[in-house]
Each structure stands twice: as structure tokens, then as C-alpha cells.
Image 1 (cartoon, rainbow, N blue to C red):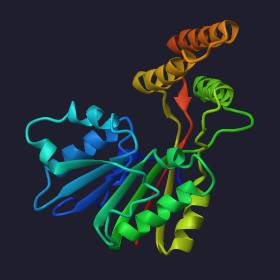
Image 2: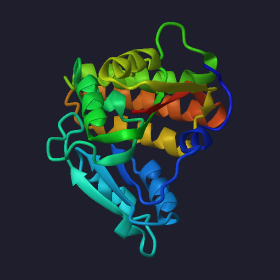
Image 3: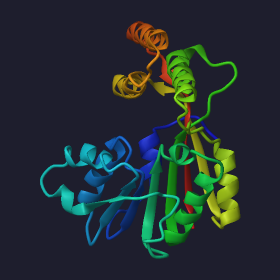
Length: 252
């Protein structure tokens, strides 16, 4: 696996959106979904995006950014990506799963269920594209120390609040499952550490901040708030990077 190039260029390389039915597997923060709508809007023919997420509130992040007639190219559905029984076999030409597999993986084998569903609803010769961050554990690079600190704080907080964590998955493990499912042509590419952009930092920071407000113990609440503020101050001077990302492109 190489460690160079532009992630978006690699994801969209060789992709033709003309007259294509597309599954956006996980609306998430909506930034990638918005970009997808922009590209599909410039294509030709009868094309459509189905964007699915368990949290319908996420759909608002996309609709607020759409302009002109872009809304006609996308439909939002609240559902579990591990259970797509309402979608017929061989429905989609392309499936994008952008930083969502680890979120699906809230319990063992849940991500595997979703990958099986992706294979079922993808047309023969269709394309599946998965984008994720590498897991970080053990000795962490100083370059993504801030990212690691936020992740560690979130892990401690979620354990205390008895909330489910979503562990990242190595590309080799995903590729193994996909091969067993039936995908033949697999292309995995890794990308060097990316800058820890302020928008991404704020997303992670605010996500933790909201959960901290649920803590009833005053001492613990103060501890988490102080730790968050310390991390933010450090970020202002040395933001660092996020761990390497990888993209898996497959043809059914």
C-alpha cells in the first residue's frame, strides 16, 4: 500500500456518475454527502443518491448546504446500514462509505453485517468505496498527539457513561471479509497524516463537551472540562495531524 496522493482524487478516479444509482452509506457530518451531491448534479441522465443514517438530524447538515435544484438528486432515509431489507438486490451502481464503518461497528460483527448488505444491494460490476482512519494504539506519534488525547478522553468518558464505543478497523481485516463475501478486485491505498483541521477538531471537541454535561459528579465534571480546555489551548499552538487514512475500492 502506498502512502501518497490526494484522497478525494483517488476515491473519485474513474468514477462516472452519469445515470447512476448511488448509496451514500452513512450521512454523518454531511460534508462528504454534500460534495457527492455537487458531483452528481453535474452528471447526466437519471441519477440519484440515497443517503442513509440512523440519526435523521444529520440530514439537516446536508440540506442546509444544498443550492438550487441540488435537492432533487438526493433522498434521505433513516435506517440501520446493517439491515437494508427494504432495498432490493442489485440496486446501486456505486456505494460510498465515508468514515462510517467504525461507527457501525458498535458491537462485534455489526460491520460485517453491513458489508454483506452492501454486497447484496450493489449491482454486478458495481463499485464499493470505503474510507477510514487507521486505528491508533500503543505508542502514538507526537504529530497526532492532540487527536490521540481527544480519543483517549472520549474513551474514558464513554466507559464512565456506559456508552458504546466504535473501534476503528484495519483495512486488511475489512479486505479479508470482503473477499470472503465475494468481492474480487480490491485496491487499497493508504494516505499520510492529514492536517487536524479546525472544523474536525471542533466536531470532536464539541461531541465530548456535550457528553460531559451528563456527568452528575461535580469533581469528575470539572476534571473533564479542565482537560478539554487544556487540549484546546494546546491545539491552538500545535494542532498536529490526524492518523493516516486508507481507501478501499472494490469491484463486485
